[in-house]
Image 1: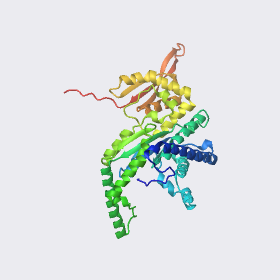
Image 2 (image 1 turned 30 degrees about the vertical axis):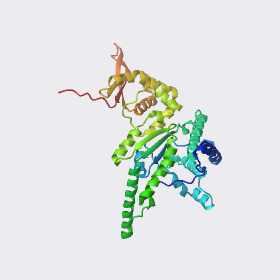
Image 3 (image 1 turned 90 degrees about the horizontal axis):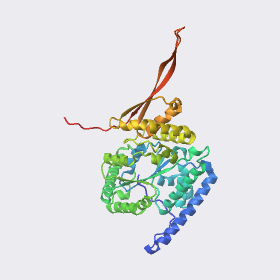
Image 4 (image 1 turned 180 degrees about the horizontal axis):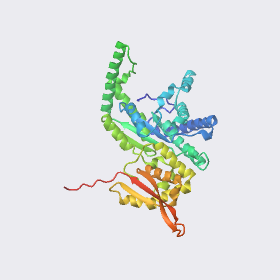
Length: 410
């Protein structure tokens, strides 16, 4: 949803020749604000409990760009299971109301404090969408400081029993963009729809009234709202473009077209999801053209657990895949089906089999393994007529992926 700007404690804009000085002040303010908030957070919850989401999507969008319409689609596309955090709604929390009731202003310091505490909730552990953050330069700097602290926590706990709780956090910036003409047109259209809906509710007494915004009825106000977005939120998100993973979504078209644009931007990439050490181990396994995203979060957890807790076995399995299976897969690239028979005793370990399947799933393949036991005669007793056999284990591995279609002339 589109939300109004939050109150801010940043400096008042000044002439261009004073910009560097005020920018320095904003950065200084951000450091003071963040340090204060972080210190209080450590005291309240303890350092070992500072476990932030695995994935944070910063969702921004021009008025009328369809954030509310597309948020659920983005949640589904990323396999998230929690509702987004709408930052402006933090102003309605009991904590924020206590600040306002005491005569205080919910500025950058309070927003950062409320947001960080919300991010620590277990429901957001695998990932979350932040709607409406950051909006100010101070919030931008605080986001950078948060990422630095998360990386420090990860380094400090990496080789401890708590290492799995401090996974590599990925930051995505996603901007749904429409031009001014489209934005104004959609805002006014929404106004007509809301007005008609509310008139029906008043007339029939059925349904709930929707919020009516002055900007949805006045073209001049709708234009001003769009320009405020360009000057504040757009500028804030653009300043992070070179630091985090940035997704610019063309939201000009219809719902289906926008959804396709979102999917193209959110193609799953292991380099953005896995722990860096895990990714290094898997580097030799090529990525298929279509990545399987079903149960992505649980699969990523298992793979990271292999790398942390079963590193020698995991390395052996990846090496086996790279040397014994990948060459055969490459030879069957056109058909999309590769069959591999092996007697390697590595696969006698059930965990190794599980690793093998997860590795191929992560790289975009579908793997199935069957075990065939074959009796091989070794000795024949002429006196008793008894034949002694040994059991030969053959693992039949089937690898499926999207092959290449070759057009043939008639």
